[in-house]
Image 1 (tube, rainbow, N blue to C red):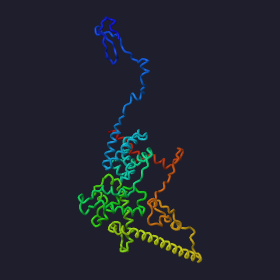
Image 2: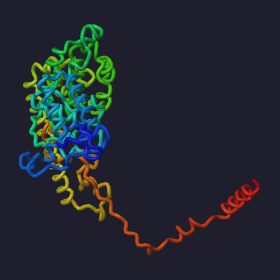
Image 3: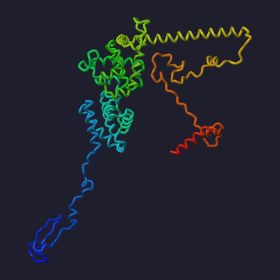
Length: 439
């Protein structure tokens, strides 16, 4: 370190750390006596340690704004559905994995919102928690088809295997959605959730035995079953209430039952039809008409003797088919004998051409009904209860032949004349033009 300034010879030389660089400055004249080096020396480099670039510039990555909002929404849904703390943390970790997956990085914001509900549904199914997809979609305000597509993509992307939930597991949680307690509605209309669950479970078992549950969406079936169960527990006072009135009395979520109202009414009609078929087999009601609007009074007796009534109804239907087959065979034999007698006896007049009505009667057209009904020879006609995919078949799509237009087709005279104005049209056109010019 120099002791004197080379410019003025002063001995007042001090260190100055201004600008983060060591310098020797003279206090009298202000000249810089010596300054530090911008680079290290070779000895300093050999003694130092190598620091990688990513370590020297590493910063903790913060989650994006949409991910933070997604976490808030997911945790709120978990608390609404009353999931446990372990399930809530599992849902949050699954949502973070799915959100950062390449398949969900560059998608619409609405799809990312639905993704949180799909994570809740996935964890719930893995833990056998009774939650339906329609419930989560209702809470998110999303469409069921969109949520189903996102759920399938989530399962495929993360390679998750979730177990399916039985419809009986959903009944208890579904019944609590209806506010039908003694303190919530009138005494005549009130019903405890446990009684509804017991009656619904019996009706669901009957529906599964008669193929009503097969291949059907759970929510409309549950809505229709809880309505029939509620009516059957006090039929004399509740038969007058329709399905819509029942949902309003129970204060069910309006968006959920209004979307599937038509489907739920179809399930109600199918269930009442099955109850009518079994109610007609009750021994003390032989000969009495059992109608869908009054069959709820017989639900207790039908469910008590369900197995026996099913066997009796099936046997009666098979016996009826056998009787119809015997009658058709006897009529065919009578027709054959009458025709043979006619052929043996000479007739003066024999029609040479068969009329169109006779031809249609003897050679019926394709029995494949165009309205989706089963043909008479179908195997489903031999069974009283058949799956819905067999009972109401879908119409086969008929490909409409496309017209090949080349521009060289002949134009008929009538078509050409349709483009030519008649004398009356010409007069009206000229009159209109004249009035337009005057205005």
